[in-house]
Length: 220
Image (cartoon, rainbow, N blue to C red; front, side, top):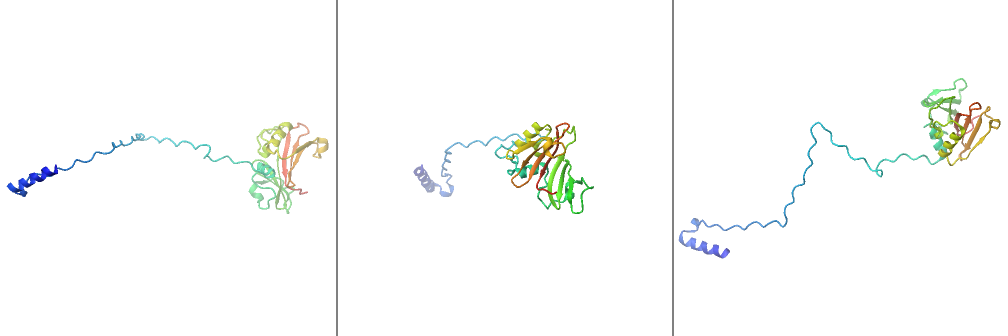
């Protein structure tokens, strides 16, 4: 093809001049693509106006925030089940807890002052240190209580089953009303390694739970 073009150009130049030659060098054809061009990916149709896009899929259990684990230390676990105000703490402001429940015996030295929160848990101070938490139940009170995970249990077998499941590290022993020294009420008690203890008091008349308490130390 190149030789034929040069010959034609030479003849053209000899006869009518190069300027008049109307012969153009043929352009090579573009090389074919090695592979066919892939079609553009299809797009999802837009959501109609006035509608919301579908919510994202929920996270898997591996990435979701895990439920809080219960406290490893049994005393702290029992303490927190009554309220968020920590026993053995001198940084708790009594007025932040709630109302004064025993103003008739609370003295100027803050000895045996009990402050009740909105859940009915009384917080007793020994001086400026929070020493005792307790919750008292009237006959027929069927509300679920968080203290020691008692819930709605009221009879001794049910109460002890729940408390022992909540605090398996603590040995809980019970004594008859005649031996408890609790005004005719039967009592169950367990001790913690830090010197604190819990106590469950049951009515002499109905046998139902009347009080649950946890003591950090002796104040009287």
